[in-house]
Image (cartoon, rainbow, N blue to C red; front, side, top):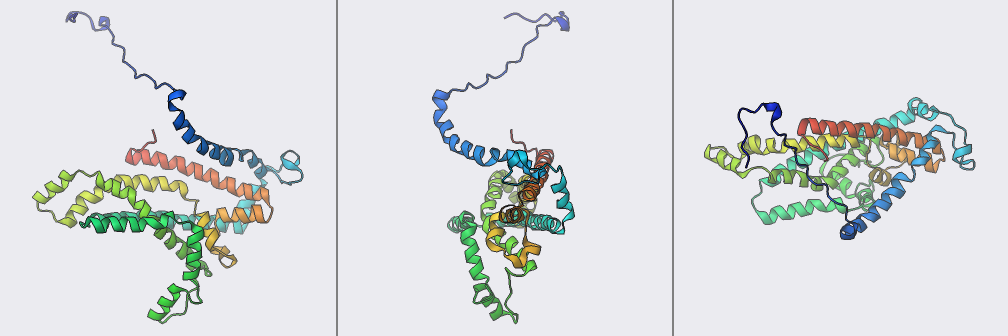
Length: 322
Protein backbone atom coordinates (compact mmCIF):
# COMPACT_ATOMS: atom_id res chain seq x y z
CA UNK A 1 0.00 0.00 0.00
CA UNK A 2 1.48 3.32 -1.08
CA UNK A 3 2.08 5.68 1.83
CA UNK A 4 1.26 9.35 1.55
CA UNK A 5 4.33 11.62 1.38
CA UNK A 6 3.99 14.24 4.15
CA UNK A 7 5.99 16.69 1.99
CA UNK A 8 3.61 16.37 -0.95
CA UNK A 9 1.53 19.53 -1.53
CA UNK A 10 -2.17 19.30 -0.72
CA UNK A 11 -3.20 20.18 -4.29
CA UNK A 12 -1.26 17.15 -5.60
CA UNK A 13 -2.82 14.62 -3.26
CA UNK A 14 -5.00 12.03 -5.01
CA UNK A 15 -8.68 12.93 -4.91
CA UNK A 16 -10.94 10.11 -3.79
CA UNK A 17 -14.18 10.10 -5.74
CA UNK A 18 -17.20 9.46 -3.49
CA UNK A 19 -18.93 6.21 -4.24
CA UNK A 20 -22.58 6.68 -5.01
CA UNK A 21 -25.01 3.91 -4.20
CA UNK A 22 -26.23 2.06 -7.24
CA UNK A 23 -29.73 2.92 -8.36
CA UNK A 24 -32.21 0.09 -7.95
CA UNK A 25 -33.04 -1.58 -11.22
CA UNK A 26 -36.62 -1.73 -12.38
CA UNK A 27 -37.25 -5.45 -12.75
CA UNK A 28 -40.77 -6.02 -14.03
CA UNK A 29 -40.33 -9.76 -14.29
CA UNK A 30 -39.49 -10.03 -10.60
CA UNK A 31 -41.78 -7.29 -9.24
CA UNK A 32 -44.87 -7.79 -11.40
CA UNK A 33 -47.02 -8.96 -8.44
CA UNK A 34 -46.39 -5.63 -6.70
CA UNK A 35 -47.26 -3.69 -9.85
CA UNK A 36 -50.39 -5.78 -10.28
CA UNK A 37 -51.36 -5.02 -6.68
CA UNK A 38 -51.04 -1.27 -7.24
CA UNK A 39 -52.69 -1.27 -10.68
CA UNK A 40 -56.37 -1.17 -9.54
CA UNK A 41 -55.68 1.78 -7.26
CA UNK A 42 -53.80 3.51 -10.10
CA UNK A 43 -56.78 3.02 -12.44
CA UNK A 44 -59.22 4.39 -9.85
CA UNK A 45 -57.09 7.48 -9.26
CA UNK A 46 -56.73 7.96 -13.01
CA UNK A 47 -60.46 7.72 -13.64
CA UNK A 48 -61.83 9.67 -10.68
CA UNK A 49 -59.02 12.18 -10.04
CA UNK A 50 -57.30 12.98 -13.33
CA UNK A 51 -59.90 12.23 -16.02
CA UNK A 52 -62.33 14.92 -14.70
CA UNK A 53 -59.67 17.66 -14.71
CA UNK A 54 -60.53 18.97 -18.21
CA UNK A 55 -64.00 19.70 -16.85
CA UNK A 56 -62.55 22.53 -14.76
CA UNK A 57 -62.95 24.69 -17.85
CA UNK A 58 -66.62 25.00 -16.84
CA UNK A 59 -65.54 27.34 -14.03
CA UNK A 60 -64.61 29.92 -16.69
CA UNK A 61 -67.72 29.42 -18.84
CA UNK A 62 -71.46 29.86 -18.75
CA UNK A 63 -71.67 26.15 -19.33
CA UNK A 64 -74.64 24.72 -21.20
CA UNK A 65 -74.74 20.91 -21.42
CA UNK A 66 -76.32 21.00 -24.89
CA UNK A 67 -73.50 23.25 -26.17
CA UNK A 68 -70.60 21.33 -24.62
CA UNK A 69 -67.20 22.60 -23.57
CA UNK A 70 -66.24 24.16 -26.88
CA UNK A 71 -69.39 26.13 -27.69
CA UNK A 72 -70.38 27.35 -24.22
CA UNK A 73 -69.67 31.10 -23.81
CA UNK A 74 -66.43 31.99 -22.04
CA UNK A 75 -66.92 34.50 -19.17
CA UNK A 76 -63.50 34.50 -17.49
CA UNK A 77 -63.48 34.91 -13.72
CA UNK A 78 -67.13 35.89 -13.43
CA UNK A 79 -68.06 32.72 -11.51
CA UNK A 80 -65.29 33.36 -8.96
CA UNK A 81 -66.53 36.92 -8.48
CA UNK A 82 -69.94 35.51 -7.62
CA UNK A 83 -68.36 33.45 -4.83
CA UNK A 84 -67.25 36.67 -3.13
CA UNK A 85 -70.44 38.59 -3.80
CA UNK A 86 -73.15 36.03 -3.01
CA UNK A 87 -73.84 36.05 0.77
CA UNK A 88 -74.85 32.39 0.73
CA UNK A 89 -71.48 31.33 -0.74
CA UNK A 90 -69.60 33.36 1.88
CA UNK A 91 -71.69 31.79 4.64
CA UNK A 92 -70.94 28.31 3.30
CA UNK A 93 -67.19 29.00 3.32
CA UNK A 94 -67.42 30.31 6.89
CA UNK A 95 -69.44 27.24 7.99
CA UNK A 96 -66.83 24.94 6.46
CA UNK A 97 -63.94 26.75 8.09
CA UNK A 98 -65.65 26.85 11.51
CA UNK A 99 -66.76 23.21 11.59
CA UNK A 100 -63.49 21.81 10.23
CA UNK A 101 -61.42 23.96 12.61
CA UNK A 102 -63.21 22.59 15.66
CA UNK A 103 -62.93 19.07 14.28
CA UNK A 104 -59.17 19.44 13.78
CA UNK A 105 -58.62 20.86 17.28
CA UNK A 106 -60.64 18.20 19.08
CA UNK A 107 -59.39 15.38 16.84
CA UNK A 108 -55.93 16.37 18.06
CA UNK A 109 -56.74 17.05 21.71
CA UNK A 110 -59.02 14.09 22.52
CA UNK A 111 -56.72 11.32 21.13
CA UNK A 112 -53.74 12.98 22.85
CA UNK A 113 -55.44 12.91 26.26
CA UNK A 114 -56.93 9.48 25.68
CA UNK A 115 -53.53 8.03 24.77
CA UNK A 116 -52.04 9.50 27.96
CA UNK A 117 -54.78 7.93 30.08
CA UNK A 118 -54.58 4.60 28.27
CA UNK A 119 -50.83 4.55 28.76
CA UNK A 120 -51.34 4.55 32.53
CA UNK A 121 -53.49 1.40 32.46
CA UNK A 122 -51.48 -1.58 33.67
CA UNK A 123 -54.11 -4.32 33.21
CA UNK A 124 -53.23 -5.38 29.64
CA UNK A 125 -56.45 -7.31 29.00
CA UNK A 126 -58.56 -4.29 29.88
CA UNK A 127 -56.25 -1.97 27.95
CA UNK A 128 -56.51 -4.02 24.75
CA UNK A 129 -60.28 -4.33 25.14
CA UNK A 130 -60.64 -0.54 25.42
CA UNK A 131 -58.36 0.00 22.42
CA UNK A 132 -60.38 -2.37 20.26
CA UNK A 133 -63.69 -0.99 21.50
CA UNK A 134 -62.92 2.65 20.66
CA UNK A 135 -61.55 1.70 17.22
CA UNK A 136 -64.81 0.13 16.05
CA UNK A 137 -66.82 3.29 15.16
CA UNK A 138 -64.12 4.35 12.67
CA UNK A 139 -65.00 1.40 10.43
CA UNK A 140 -68.72 2.21 10.28
CA UNK A 141 -70.08 4.20 7.36
CA UNK A 142 -71.75 7.54 7.96
CA UNK A 143 -74.78 6.13 6.17
CA UNK A 144 -75.20 3.68 9.06
CA UNK A 145 -74.18 6.10 11.80
CA UNK A 146 -76.36 8.84 10.30
CA UNK A 147 -79.44 6.67 10.61
CA UNK A 148 -78.51 5.71 14.18
CA UNK A 149 -77.94 9.34 15.20
CA UNK A 150 -81.18 10.52 13.60
CA UNK A 151 -83.11 7.97 15.69
CA UNK A 152 -81.17 8.61 18.90
CA UNK A 153 -81.38 12.42 18.65
CA UNK A 154 -85.01 12.60 17.62
CA UNK A 155 -87.27 14.86 19.68
CA UNK A 156 -90.00 12.25 19.45
CA UNK A 157 -88.81 9.32 21.54
CA UNK A 158 -85.07 9.67 20.86
CA UNK A 159 -82.86 8.02 23.47
CA UNK A 160 -80.70 11.09 24.10
CA UNK A 161 -83.65 13.42 24.63
CA UNK A 162 -85.38 10.87 26.86
CA UNK A 163 -82.32 10.73 29.11
CA UNK A 164 -81.89 14.52 29.18
CA UNK A 165 -85.52 15.29 29.94
CA UNK A 166 -85.59 12.66 32.68
CA UNK A 167 -82.50 14.08 34.39
CA UNK A 168 -82.95 17.80 33.73
CA UNK A 169 -86.01 20.07 33.69
CA UNK A 170 -85.63 20.96 29.99
CA UNK A 171 -87.58 20.56 26.79
CA UNK A 172 -86.38 18.08 24.13
CA UNK A 173 -83.50 19.54 22.11
CA UNK A 174 -83.81 19.68 18.32
CA UNK A 175 -80.21 18.57 17.70
CA UNK A 176 -80.55 18.15 13.93
CA UNK A 177 -82.99 20.99 13.33
CA UNK A 178 -81.33 23.90 15.10
CA UNK A 179 -78.25 25.38 13.43
CA UNK A 180 -76.11 25.83 16.55
CA UNK A 181 -76.98 22.40 17.95
CA UNK A 182 -76.36 20.88 14.53
CA UNK A 183 -72.79 22.20 14.51
CA UNK A 184 -72.26 20.86 18.01
CA UNK A 185 -73.69 17.48 17.00
CA UNK A 186 -71.52 17.01 13.89
CA UNK A 187 -68.35 18.01 15.75
CA UNK A 188 -68.97 15.74 18.73
CA UNK A 189 -70.12 12.78 16.62
CA UNK A 190 -67.12 13.09 14.28
CA UNK A 191 -64.69 13.16 17.22
CA UNK A 192 -66.45 10.18 18.81
CA UNK A 193 -66.23 8.21 15.57
CA UNK A 194 -62.55 8.78 14.78
CA UNK A 195 -60.69 9.57 18.01
CA UNK A 196 -60.02 5.89 18.75
CA UNK A 197 -58.37 5.34 15.40
CA UNK A 198 -56.38 8.58 15.72
CA UNK A 199 -55.10 7.38 19.09
CA UNK A 200 -52.96 4.79 17.27
CA UNK A 201 -50.52 7.52 16.19
CA UNK A 202 -50.03 8.76 19.74
CA UNK A 203 -49.71 5.25 21.17
CA UNK A 204 -46.97 4.61 18.60
CA UNK A 205 -45.21 7.77 19.80
CA UNK A 206 -45.48 6.54 23.40
CA UNK A 207 -43.96 3.20 22.42
CA UNK A 208 -40.96 5.04 21.00
CA UNK A 209 -40.04 6.76 24.28
CA UNK A 210 -36.87 5.33 25.82
CA UNK A 211 -37.82 3.23 28.91
CA UNK A 212 -34.53 4.16 30.57
CA UNK A 213 -35.92 7.67 31.05
CA UNK A 214 -38.66 6.31 33.27
CA UNK A 215 -36.17 4.15 35.18
CA UNK A 216 -33.94 7.15 35.80
CA UNK A 217 -36.92 9.22 36.94
CA UNK A 218 -37.90 6.51 39.43
CA UNK A 219 -34.40 6.62 40.91
CA UNK A 220 -34.77 10.39 41.25
CA UNK A 221 -38.08 9.91 43.08
CA UNK A 222 -40.49 11.07 40.36
CA UNK A 223 -44.08 9.88 40.71
CA UNK A 224 -46.40 8.90 37.85
CA UNK A 225 -47.70 12.43 37.41
CA UNK A 226 -44.22 13.93 37.08
CA UNK A 227 -43.19 11.15 34.70
CA UNK A 228 -46.14 12.02 32.47
CA UNK A 229 -45.44 15.75 32.76
CA UNK A 230 -41.69 15.69 32.09
CA UNK A 231 -41.18 12.55 29.98
CA UNK A 232 -44.39 11.32 28.34
CA UNK A 233 -45.86 14.62 27.18
CA UNK A 234 -42.54 16.03 25.80
CA UNK A 235 -42.04 12.72 23.99
CA UNK A 236 -45.42 13.15 22.28
CA UNK A 237 -44.96 16.78 21.29
CA UNK A 238 -43.09 16.13 17.97
CA UNK A 239 -45.78 13.80 16.57
CA UNK A 240 -48.45 16.20 17.83
CA UNK A 241 -46.85 19.02 15.85
CA UNK A 242 -46.70 16.83 12.75
CA UNK A 243 -50.33 15.72 13.02
CA UNK A 244 -51.52 19.24 13.77
CA UNK A 245 -49.68 20.93 10.94
CA UNK A 246 -50.63 18.29 8.38
CA UNK A 247 -54.27 18.66 9.44
CA UNK A 248 -54.22 22.26 8.21
CA UNK A 249 -54.51 20.95 4.66
CA UNK A 250 -58.01 19.69 5.54
CA UNK A 251 -59.25 23.00 6.91
CA UNK A 252 -61.83 23.18 4.10
CA UNK A 253 -62.85 19.51 4.35
CA UNK A 254 -65.60 19.44 6.94
CA UNK A 255 -66.84 15.96 6.06
CA UNK A 256 -69.25 15.60 3.15
CA UNK A 257 -70.43 12.10 4.11
CA UNK A 258 -71.36 13.12 7.62
CA UNK A 259 -73.06 16.43 6.77
CA UNK A 260 -74.92 14.98 3.80
CA UNK A 261 -76.43 12.18 5.90
CA UNK A 262 -77.41 14.43 8.81
CA UNK A 263 -78.37 17.85 7.47
CA UNK A 264 -81.72 19.16 6.20
CA UNK A 265 -83.07 22.49 4.88
CA UNK A 266 -83.61 23.76 8.45
CA UNK A 267 -79.85 23.93 9.08
CA UNK A 268 -78.58 25.09 5.68
CA UNK A 269 -77.75 28.50 7.13
CA UNK A 270 -75.27 27.17 9.72
CA UNK A 271 -74.65 23.58 8.67
CA UNK A 272 -74.11 23.78 4.90
CA UNK A 273 -70.47 23.27 3.85
CA UNK A 274 -68.65 23.72 0.55
CA UNK A 275 -68.98 20.09 -0.57
CA UNK A 276 -72.73 19.85 0.10
CA UNK A 277 -73.25 23.31 -1.42
CA UNK A 278 -71.43 22.26 -4.61
CA UNK A 279 -73.54 19.09 -4.72
CA UNK A 280 -76.81 21.02 -4.45
CA UNK A 281 -75.87 23.90 -6.75
CA UNK A 282 -73.91 21.92 -9.32
CA UNK A 283 -75.90 18.70 -9.59
CA UNK A 284 -79.38 19.30 -8.18
CA UNK A 285 -79.84 22.89 -9.44
CA UNK A 286 -77.92 22.39 -12.68
CA UNK A 287 -75.59 25.41 -12.23
CA UNK A 288 -72.53 23.44 -13.29
CA UNK A 289 -70.27 26.43 -13.85
CA UNK A 290 -70.78 28.00 -10.42
CA UNK A 291 -70.53 24.62 -8.68
CA UNK A 292 -67.26 23.92 -10.49
CA UNK A 293 -65.91 27.36 -9.58
CA UNK A 294 -66.69 26.84 -5.89
CA UNK A 295 -65.08 23.39 -5.94
CA UNK A 296 -62.01 24.74 -7.77
CA UNK A 297 -61.73 27.61 -5.28
CA UNK A 298 -61.72 25.09 -2.43
CA UNK A 299 -59.10 22.92 -4.18
CA UNK A 300 -56.73 25.85 -4.74
CA UNK A 301 -56.96 26.99 -1.13
CA UNK A 302 -56.50 23.40 0.11
CA UNK A 303 -53.44 22.94 -2.10
CA UNK A 304 -51.82 26.09 -0.72
CA UNK A 305 -52.58 24.99 2.84
CA UNK A 306 -51.18 21.49 2.26
CA UNK A 307 -47.91 22.91 0.90
CA UNK A 308 -47.69 25.31 3.86
CA UNK A 309 -48.48 22.50 6.29
CA UNK A 310 -45.69 20.28 4.97
CA UNK A 311 -43.25 23.16 5.15
CA UNK A 312 -44.25 23.83 8.75
CA UNK A 313 -44.00 20.14 9.64
CA UNK A 314 -40.48 20.05 8.16
CA UNK A 315 -39.45 23.24 9.96
CA UNK A 316 -40.82 22.47 13.43
CA UNK A 317 -40.68 18.64 13.57
CA UNK A 318 -38.17 17.73 10.83
CA UNK A 319 -40.89 15.74 9.07
CA UNK A 320 -40.50 14.97 5.40
CA UNK A 321 -42.20 12.59 2.98
CA UNK A 322 -38.95 11.33 1.42
